[in-house]
Amino acid sequence: MLTSAHMMALTPVILVCATAVTVMLGIAWRRQHAATALVSILGLNLALVSLYLVYSAGDVSTPLLVFDRLSMLGMVLVLASTLACLTMSHAYLEGYPGRKEEFYLLMLCAAAGGMVLVASQHLATLFFGLELLSMPLYGMLAYTYRDKRSLESGIKYLVLSAAATAFLLFGMALLYSQSGRLDIAGLLAGLESSGGGAWALAGAGLMLVGLGFKLSIVPFHLWTPDVYQGGPGPAATFLATASKAAVFIVLLRIVMVAPAFHVEWLHTVLGGLALLTMIVGNLLALIQTNLKRLLGYSSIAHFGYLLVALVVADGLAVETAGIYLITYLMTTLGAFGVVTLLSSPYSGEDASALHHYRGLFWRRPYLAAVLTVCLLSLAGIPFTAGFIGKFYIVALGVEAGRWWLVGGIIAGSVIGLYYYLRVMVTLYLVEPGMRGRDAPDNWGMKAGGVVVLGLALLVIAFGVYPTPVIDWMSVLTSPVH
Amino acid sequence: MNGIPMEHGLILAAILFAIGLAGLMFRRNMVFVLMSLEIMLNSAGLAFIVAGTAWEQPEGQAMFLLVITLAAAEASVGLALLIQLYQRFRTLDTDAVSGMRG
Image (cartoon, rainbow over all chains, first blue to last red; front, side, top):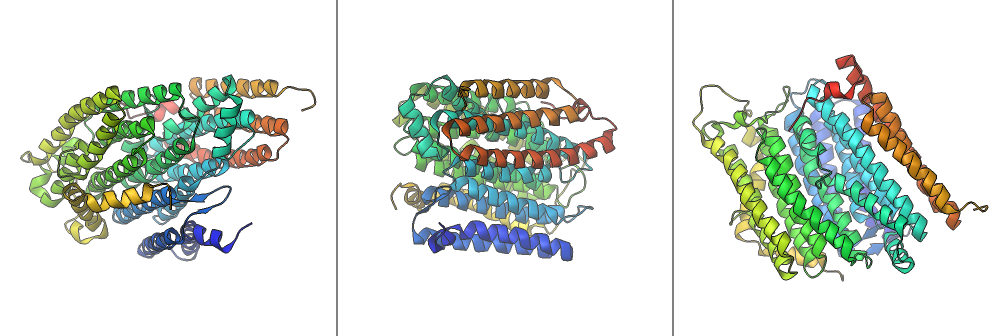
């Protein structure tokens, strides 16, 4: 039975969906690029404000969705990343010769999917949210379909993501057949009492494959660099930030409610995957000559670090995961934002090869500075946000005595430093005559430029004075309200 | 379930899933890739129906409706991309578009 409290708690999701419908009707009536962007940004901001009201009203739980602090955190992260991506898409799509407005529609639908996903406590909503998040991404990645690479990345993501969904669904069906429950808490409790068995084991494994694919955990990572490289800048940014954050939050929720999760073999498997992911991601990033591919491999490695929080799964694990996720999002949005700005307005393939960035400092000193800050933060240098995140993860690993994982993080960071520094050096090399792609002269005045500059300032501010965010995170991730 | 054990239904679904997966991995033609995906999704749907019947619950059928909706949406987006693929490359071979490596 839907009460007014339930409706109230659903307001942010409803607002985002209503914005999507408004944008759709607007497109049918009259195509207006700036107005469409404005309406979308307005709708997302309204949803953010309403999120605060929902938060102060307290926890609400329905059989399908739960609005507790963890889902609030997830929704804030999804909405904020979507806002940044939307702002960048405006600058990017200005030069796109085809139809521009549908991109916003797709992104709003995906944001609504992410919000449902982070609040799901039932396999039906988990599946629904995940697909509402992925389905628009096929369209977004193949949006500039006249460009060969964009089409390729769209097709690759469609085929592999649909296969991952099939794995996830088959796993869900097997778990359901063993427990007779579809809500996550009941399902896990049912499995614990029945003791599992081969079918349940296979089901859990298949679900892990499906979710691992969406998070691009090694060995399910092969799609990531290709899709990032080929997709248009804002779509790749959304995939690397909002989409991954939402999937990670739901995985975190499953781990937190699971009594059956304290099974040793699952910890061992997850620990092994985490170690493999950080090492392989960092090693493959070493040989890249394309910045978007390099950022793709670096995001694989970062999710390897994040998995440590899932392996430990007690004490400060949720808070650590939240802090790491927020630093990762800020930094990745900034780095991808610079790539997107340099490729804006759209004119064919994105400017992502490393030689496009040669001597960037001498042409666009501020943009080069922003990219430098973001790369330093990805490498985890002190006085940037990345350092705080990495510090928390290492502290968590040491506390739990997972020395292999701590060793993996340190080895990964050392390898990471090398390739991040290589990109930074490229930025400051003296320009050799040939000019790469360039951002428009007034980029700093445009909304996208302001967002990127703001993100770089945030990365530094959080690195120097992290207390407010840490306090906020410990409030948001404490279980009681 | 009328004397048929649940395991038999699940084994049938697992076989269908394996057939779909094999098709996905070994076929290079985009149409067959989409068909294999369809088989995989439907095998998951069949498993939900089997489990729902065994527990005598409606949830399995509800999930099946969600799965079948997804399969339809997936096919429509997939076919749209397939048309673009054919218009550009005059082929349905997925290897022809695979340009990015590393």
